[in-house]
Image 1 (tube, one colour):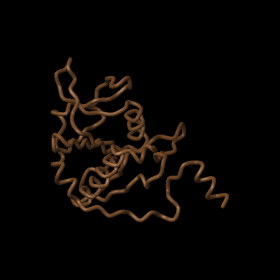
Image 2 (cartoon, one colour):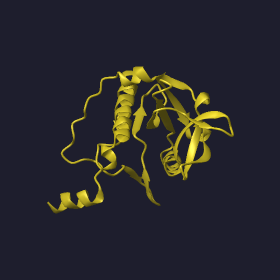
Image 3 (spheres, one colour):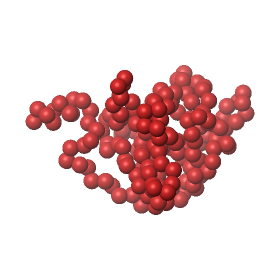
Length: 182
């Protein structure tokens, strides 16, 4: 089964679409970075291709930046620190740090947790390192993250299924080659 066909990916993709709609409903313009496909979009830099966060948001009179959307069932619990946590893989965290350095725009993380019923927002600078299931991770203290919205208010946003462009902006390399050969 392809990763994109897994239920957890589908739930995350829906959360991402609903967050984009919520941002638009609250006065931001949103650039959707991902248009489907099997490959994450990247930003070409002098040294490497860097994975982009899910959305870019902007408004003349509001903060602008990048938004990575993470949807989870519930918080984890870090026994030694006695805190509820949320987080993701350190490799993505490092990519998003590079996005901040290259673009000068902050990367925010929207954590939607079903059991807690909230969307909380995190900044990269407030993360701390850890290990989860043998993978290097970056975590945030759930209870210290500001509440952005109630999860129900985000998930009830109507979404427009964006029409797929004739040629997607981000194609896996083998698909790009096939398009040029055609």
